[in-house]
Amino acid sequence: MECEVDINLEKCNCTYSGCPRKGKCCECIAYHRKNGELPACYFTDEQEKTWDRSIEYFVRINSKR
Image 1: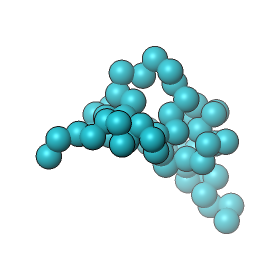
Image 2: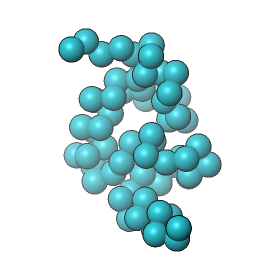
Image 3: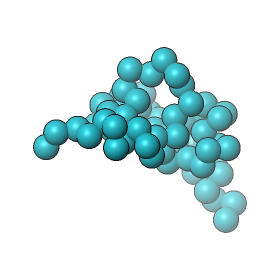
Image 4: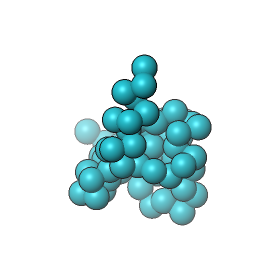
């Protein structure tokens, strides 16, 4: 399966402009998993702007519902 970067970029909410993995979902997920994080797409646009991609942050903000 070929990565469809153009299509992925339409949905990518990552605000890190220098990211070499932007639109390359497989690479992005592998990178963040290695660092104990989640990629931007797991967060709302407002949450993503904090750049806190930690699993702890994700659990904390989603436990309030």
